[in-house]
Amino acid sequence: MTPEEQEDEQFYRDTESIAFPKLDDHQLSLLEPLGERRVMKRGDVLFKAGQRDIGLAIVLRGELDAFETRDGIEYNLATARERDFLGDVSMLQGTSILGSSRVTSDEAEILHIPAAELRRALAEIPAVSKTIVDALIMRRRRLSRDREFAGMRVLANRDARDGHQLDDFLDKNRIPHRLIDFESEQGQALGKRLHLTSRDLPALITPAGAPLRKPSLREVAQVAGLLRPLAFENETEIMSDLAIVGAGPAGLAAAVYAASEGLRTVVLESYAPGGQAGSSSLIENFFGFPTGVSGGDLTWLAQLQAYRFGAKFSTPAQALSLHYDGADEYPSCLQVDGCGAVLRAKSVLIATGAHYRRLEAEGCEQFEGMGVYYAATALEGQICRGATVIVAGSGNSAGQAAMFLSDGAAKVLLVIRGADLSKISTYLSRRVEAKENIEILFHTQVRKMSGGKLVEEAELENTATGERRVVRTPAIFSMIGADPCTEWLPGEIERDEKGFIKTGSDVADSPAWKESERQPGPLETSLSGVFAAGDVRSGSVKRCAAAVGEGGMAIAGVQIALAASARN
Ligand SMILES: Cc1cc2nc3c(=O)[nH]c(=O)nc-3n(C[C@H](O)[C@H](O)[C@H](O)COP(=O)(O)OP(=O)(O)OC[C@H]3O[C@@H](n4cnc5c(N)ncnc54)[C@H](O)[C@@H]3O)c2cc1C
Image 1 (cartoon, rainbow, N blue to C red):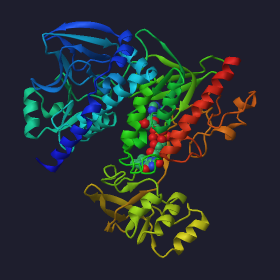
Image 2 (image 1 turned 135 degrees about the vertical axis):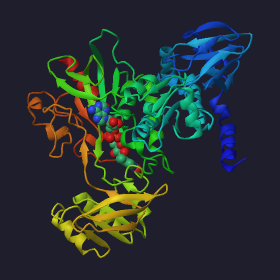
Image 3 (image 1 turned 90 degrees about the horizontal axis):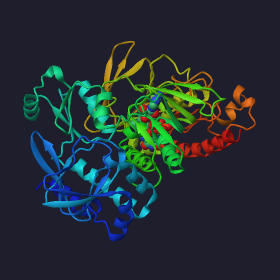
Image 4 (image 1 turned 180 degrees about the vertical axis):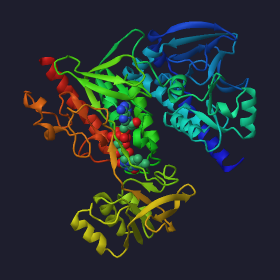
């Protein structure tokens, strides 16, 4: 057995009792009124891969198997006996289930709890929710580690951009899947079996075994069950107390607080919950995690928490516009990409974050968080100790980062596209010029990054002479600015000169507030009942914990705004 296999074995042993707990009499008595007993015969199918919102099945008598069907062969995932329950995180999220289950004893009796009742129980009955939620999460962790399990399969040509995008989309949305190279033996066999040629790639093979040729992200989201219709058929309007736009740390924190306080909460996310934090492999400065936490894990758990309290998510669902009529009980009307109905909300939280401008250098995306950084804190400072590091940018943030890093690094190369330091404040540019271990490279751009898992080298080009040089470095700081995701908002929502949304005292003099009896809350925008939190907000601290804090704080403001409008 290889050391990795031994580690896996140990992991499976250690987590067995969490993943597969037996429900006790008390827990069964609490769950019994929420479900319905059903007697089934050998061979009867309880759930089929691809189904959604199926609820939870508790085995009262007999035996059932959960299995995955791959290329016509069934692979056992688990066997459930008396007091066990069949389920996976997808039941909590409402996404499509990845396996099927069938009765394997002569007869079995189950207690079936519908999805809506299950969610209510998980929010309201602590005596059962901890056992069930911990088990569902642990099952997913075990499944992700399982080298045999496939889930969804993406068949693509190696290095094909569209194949990698599909892989990334499923990854960030936490849908278990495998990326299979079409040229590999396995890929060729799969292609042959499903009659797929390279013209059909990338292809998605669903857990039910059906291939989707060149699917759009919407189609993938549909199959995975991520794209939930916000409206019923023929419905033209969806009513909510709060619409949260953006499911990064700020939006997710707000969703947890709002849903737990009983607000009808709809969360719109244009790509994948988690936002920027979701692509951070290790957040080391988030409080409570002394050895750091993966941004993906942190935001996934937050998402499950929000689901558990009843927040409604739809992905991908991009807010396209916001129309505001202060006289209406539901003043905000949001148009959502791909949704025929209008989302009407009593209050709105804009948590759409910002896009850090990416260096146009080969390999940049691959090394994000692994040598390419967007902030220079003490943490990054440690990585740079004694090394040569690169700071790209010509504004104050680049100047500050260069100064800060120069204290520990052997050398800082400040890479500037233009010909001078005129965008940096005079006092700062003087300090930068005076610091002996900062070298300023004008007319220079980073062209390429390379290395193993972490960045090891960067190639710089002097655009005036065309000369290129390779620098050995563990860190490249991209300080070329961030663009707030606010292009879809109406002009009445005031923004600062860089496009970030103004809130609180900064908007107290705006036309809407001048006529109001109350003052805007600290995170309230120039429109009453419309809030902004996280990176998209002018003056916010661009950090995960700050975004989470603002998301929670915004809900206190939402409650005040709702109470005020109910009085009027
Ligand atoms: C690689 C990387 C590493 C980082 N590491 C750290 C770290 O170690 N520590 C730390 O404190 N901070 C770190 N940060 C910063 C931190 O992640 C951000 O400050 C934080 O994610 C901001 O949260 P947010 O919710 O405000 O916005 P975001 O995380 O940007 O989330 C906004 C969300 O809104 C969605 N969205 C945008 N427009 C729309 C629309 N019109 N409709 C619907 N949805 C929309 C986006 O898809 C996105 O999911 C890192 C950032 C990056 C990029």
